[in-house]
Length: 290
Image (tube, rainbow, N blue to C red; front, side, top):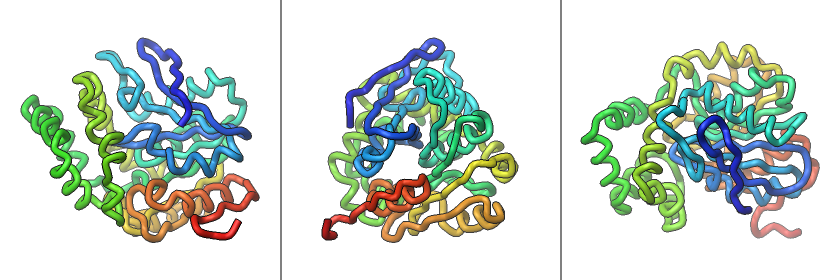
């Protein structure tokens, strides 16, 4: 990925990268990730779009303070402020997990500029992964924060937990690169670790429950991309959600992928995303003739 830049927002600095050429495309990660979670997808997008990959407040290289608002609405508003900062007249959004919910919120709050939305393995109405309230309860207690920090420091333990959580079909992808980026990186400082926890504590269960109402307000085209074996947000729930949207959104199922299809099958995800966003250029799978 390209060098990280920052822009000031209220009392913190928010981190982002810019790469590629073409229409504006903002990429929003989920939890427990940051902008590098799109590192395998970006090479397919950059020939067609100017890609802005953001770190949410408290995540990756973005800052946070005791005054930072971690609500979903605040995260979405920071993205809108970023679009203002970049002087974007129009843009599309790709969001994974919580980033997919922020993307849908932007389609309402910044409707004049948002052209299309892609949401990858994201929150669905009527379903809250059981791990979320359990971790939130843990993080609200001092001993729980200490316990989770110790768990993050044990790679064998984290690999077993993540392997059982439906993140990947191919468990070999829980390799050292993945662990360095999305597990032990949170231990680089106490402030970074606290940011990880505060972000998850901001997950709004009531907003997730009302997502059908949010969908009814969205007028822009939407595409949901889902790993067939997602163990966090089951694909059955995605099908039910899209069916309730009565043709106002599409659903692309990625085989041999789970919660992170853009990590497991980036070429397959790129094919669907580029077709939806309007790029006619072919995307070749590894091993295919050029």
